[in-house]
Each structure stands twice: as C-alpha cells, then as structure tokens.
Length: 425
Length: 165
Image (cartoon, rainbow over all chains, first blue to last red; front, side, top):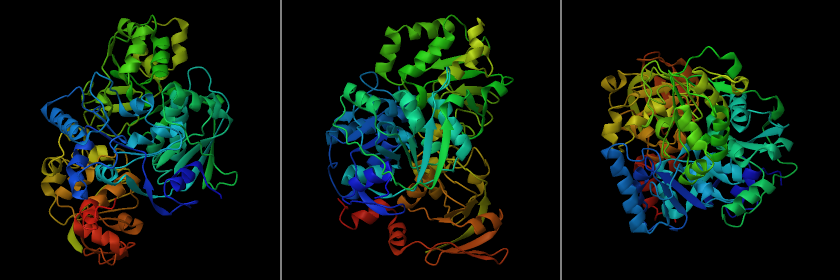
C-alpha cells in the first residue's frame, strides 16, 4: 500500500483504506487542544459553527500555561473565559494552575490523554510533540480548533514524507535535543514544510521517551506538519505507566514512499547550539565558547521533563551559576516539579544559584518570568530563537540541550558539559 | 474580489513572533493586535499601512507559532493580500480560515519592490504591478475558497452549510 505511519493514521481516521500525498481528507479527531492564548479566540468563534455543545466533552483539553500564573489582568481574563467555557460545556480536561497543571505538551502525555495511533490537533504549533508516542498530531489555529470542538473533524492535506534514519547510540552529554538541532540545521527552517518527519532506524531504541518528545516537539521548526516515531516497547511501557487508552500501533509499509532520506548518526553528535535568529543556525557549542551570556532558561515543552532536569542537575551539582548570569529552571508540570523535589534536584538548582519557577511557558515566548533586556543573551532549552522571542528585539536566544544550558550557566558563557567535569567551579 | 494598494516588502522566514509579538497576546481584540502588527521588524508599518495595501515577502512567511492573532493583526491593519514565495503551513490555514487572502507566487514575490502599486484579482489569480507594468499569474483560488473568503472565513462559510458536523 506504500504508506508511511502518518499516512496510515490519517487514512484510518478518514474512513478510507489508503491516502496518498496531496490527498485532501476530512478526518476524525481524537483530541482537540487549546491554551490560554489560542482557546479564547476559538471560544469566540465556536458559536458561529452552529452547534451549542462541543462534539465530545471528553475529547477536548484546555491548558492554561502560557501566561500563567496570570501575568496581568488581560491574561487573567483570558483564563477566566477558558474556565467559563469549560464549565458551560462540561469539558473534562480543563486544567488549573497548581492543581494538576503544567505545560500542555508535557502534561497531556503525562495524563495519558494521547495514545499511539491517535489523531490530535492543537491550537499550538508544538502539538507535534505527541508524535513521540506514535500519534499523528499537528498544530492548527484557533478557527480550526473551534471547528474541531464543534464538529470533531479537521480537514487535512496528506503530507509527503521525509525519512529520518537514526543510527548509533548518543554519547554522554548528548541526546535528543542535539539530534533535532542537527536535523533542523541540515534541513533548514522550511526544509520539511508540509512534510511529515518519519523517524526510524536502530537509533530510535536508544532514545528515552523524553528525548523523543523533544525531537518530535521541534519538527515544526523545520516546517514539518508532524514528526512521528515508531511504537516500541519503551512507548508501550510509557503508555501503560500513564494510563493511556489502548494503543493502535501503525507501522510504515516496507515499500512506503519517502521524498528523501536523511541519516543522523547519534554516536557522532556533539553538543550543539542554534545561534540567533533561526533554529537552523546550528554550530558546535565547543566553537561558541566566546559567547558570554546573561541568562539561562532550562524548561519548556521541549526540555522541561524530569530527565532534562536530572541531567542539568548532574552538570550543576556542587557548582555555582556564574555571578553575571541568571539561571531560571522551570519544571514542565506539577508532577515533574514534585519528582524533582523528591530527587533533590531542586535543592541542587537552588544551591547553585538558580531560581526555580512554577510550571509555565513564560519566558520561552517572551511572556513573563524571565524577559530579556536590550543586548542581553540567553542560552535556552526552548525551541525558538526568533527576533524578540524572549524579550527586547535586540536580545538574543541560543538554543541548546539541558546539559549544555546547565554548563553554560556555570561558565557564564556558552560551554560544553564536559568542561564541567574537571572540577571547575 | 480584488485588492489595490501599495507594497510593503520583507524577506524570508517572517515569523509570527515578529508579525505579532507574544507580549501582545494577552488580548485577542483585532484592533489592539493591529496596533502592534510587524512592530519588531518594521516600526513604521502600522503608521503607514492603508486599506488594500499588500505585503510581499520571501520564503516561509508566517513560520513559527500557530497564533491566529498573526493573520488577524495583518487583516485588521487593512492589508488586502499577502504575496510570498511560500507560506508556513499553519499560517496558510489560519489566514484562509479567517479570510485573509494570500497568494503563493515566487516570481511576483521576488520582483515586486517596496512601494510599488499593485492590483490583484483573486478570481483569476492575476497580480499586476502597476508601477513596473509587469503581470504575474498566481494559482487562483478554487471556487469554494473564494466563497469561504467572501463569507468572512471558515466559521461563517460552514455555518451557511449547516455546521459541517
């Protein structure tokens, strides 16, 4: 049948046996996601679709994470509008700050709300994160979210595919973030535009789920519609642990058609940094040691998960953040926050001179909790480094892994994690 | 359906963070968003843009965030069309869903200059640079998309067709 994983999931949700690249289909959705920025626009549009109630109150997730805890009155009004809509509609998965909340793309998998084979749309571009679980998930806008909430459907153009063959085992201090930065560097920020990124190869098995989440998360930064990983024993274990619904496992056909193939040898990865102002401006961190920095952010929907915090703490343990540098650590969800507390990671961060923030997207998009002044530079484990992304238009963001970000916080300049192993304070 | 206006020209990878910076996303009011449109790459844009004017840009226009606030801001400024070599896919959906006409036309995107006066006919996909006298053919919208744009976007269009559930 010549179909990729993505194409098979789209076909299965469109009542057809097969789809080909370019086919327009009307697909059923398993989950519709919105946040405190995008949902208010969708809620305003919702009545225009002519249905009083949402198509299924179990299949909508509303997450206040961008400007929360509410940064100002307008942000508070947006959360209030979302909360009121969830109440009126009886939406089951509307989360609340402090209770069980967090950054949407860390939270939904943690809550078991996405399973393998699902078709998910979300009014947030990083909705592609759930491809790590073998689901088709893609970012849409607020009108599509409103249509999805009303009808349970979304129109999709079936994407052609790029095969990303992963081989080898990542070396110490490198991982999923370096792999995806390497890929975006190779493809460019529009190199996968309208395509799916189909990750495959022996290297997949060597990547933790958190690594896979970070990689699928940044598929959009190469312009991709989605990024997707095959389902293996690690995926199934994750789904079981998090109480997800029964997975539907789709595998690419042996003769699936790919427009091109890109190979990444995980064993040859080095710590990478994406220079301003595009995620594709990747360089070896080792070649950027002259870049002094004012701030480090460790968190976000890309790298705010427990294994990210563990590796950052491992780098920082017993060391101090450079005196001219501020380091902000943001556990992505309440559960991760608690786990990091129990494991002593937060103690390590605070003793090193970091500030630990409540779960929020906050500084990643220049919202709050760590905005940059003119001329300031930040190393961040986030996903975008566009002009003005984290604050002033003359500020700069350098994207890196948690290990590289932690090392850079200690050094006060871009640094590689292995530099921290020689007892440097 | 037509538009006629003056061209504002930008480069490749104009992202949604510069179209409408996230610090302004604590509102979804179109006129408030319009007041900050493009301010991180062109502070003079909002003061100069007039109804019917046209944005012309390079590759991958609208990349980045899924914020529909980006096309909302552009449309509320009065922009009649965005022409680019290519569009990022979420922006493409969002723009059409809220009835901001956008045309992919590499030749026009490369050759038309800032300040040129252009005429665009959406039924035929014809872009005419009045200043240089050159004409470009973009792929015209199919009839349903023209209807959708005329209706003011996906919601109004589907509502007129019974909600689409």
